Image (cartoon, rainbow, N blue to C red; front, side, top):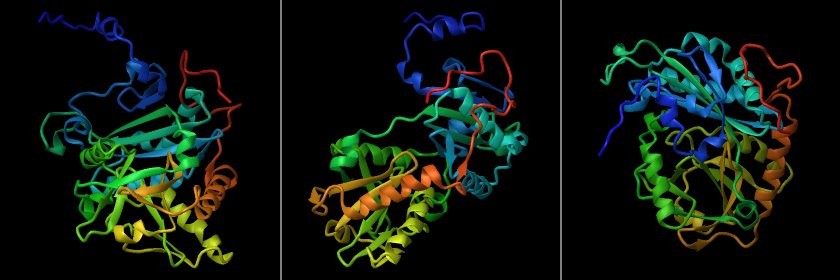
Amino acid sequence: MKMPLITKENFFRELEKEPKPWQEEYLAMYCSQWKGATTDPHLMLIPIDDHLVHRGDGVFDVMRCVRGNIYQMEAHLERLERSARAISLHLPPDYTEVRDLIKALVVMGGEKECLIRVVLSRGPGSFSTDPSDCIGPQLYINVIRFRPLPASCYEEGIGVVTSAVPIKKAFFANIKSCNYLPNVLMKLDALRAGCRYSIGLDEEGFIAEGSTENVGVFTQDGVLKFPGFKRTLSGITASRIFELAKRLVEEGIIKDVIFANIRPEEAYEAKEMFLTGTSLNIVPVVAYDGRRIGEEVPGPIYARLTTLLWEDMTNNDALLTRIDWDHPAKILEGEGCQRPVSI
């Protein structure tokens, strides 16, 4: 094998030789080590010795921009900070400007429908497990084009399977860390079974969560149940749907909405079942471990909650961070930092 020597002079020439179509989805990135941002995917790199890379030593969160405004940004940042505190990760100095940085990056990316990933890492410094080797915590923010699931997933529903991968212990389950190996293996379980998603069970055999999704089950007795957040990550979208579902209780459409232990057998017999998440909203589940769920697709509870959630995502000023697209914050300056806005 002939191995070329890569230098500063030829690095980008070699990097650009092979096409990378997946990078078309990468719109903008901020890196605290540069103290700046880029819209060039070739520059969206982090050091290999950042403990985030070789130890998974970092936390992250993902929020969504809908019609040009960010939904539940404060809730996502609060969860990010809670995860950082849980692993004794201090916030980097530039985190004080994270809200303005996010808004500026979204405008730079030029897409009003996008996902924002905010990552806090322990930082570079060595290849050890010793946090004291690091120069200090780092902030990375990526804006990615939003690609929704195919419409058929919402119109016809999806199938899920039980994953054989053990779920994380309660302490780690409640930290949105960058160590997602169990989640990856759960996704593999789903793909091997010919499904998009799988669901993990806790040590007592109760439904926990998907690889990146929360679960809702509408039971035969008219109660909407969610697995509790003691052994699962506290889903921002799931929590909001829980609150919106109280309206259905008031209207007499459902008897109650609760957090509870749910056996797979109860879900098999459910009237409706669905997954929730930042990029999913709500997607109906029509088959679980090969068993048919419910009779209608979409079910009436799913349909009503979907309407309530979309209204919340687009009209609830209390949960929307507005972005002034005509006069964006000028935190990030520099040649080529603006893209045409896609409406």
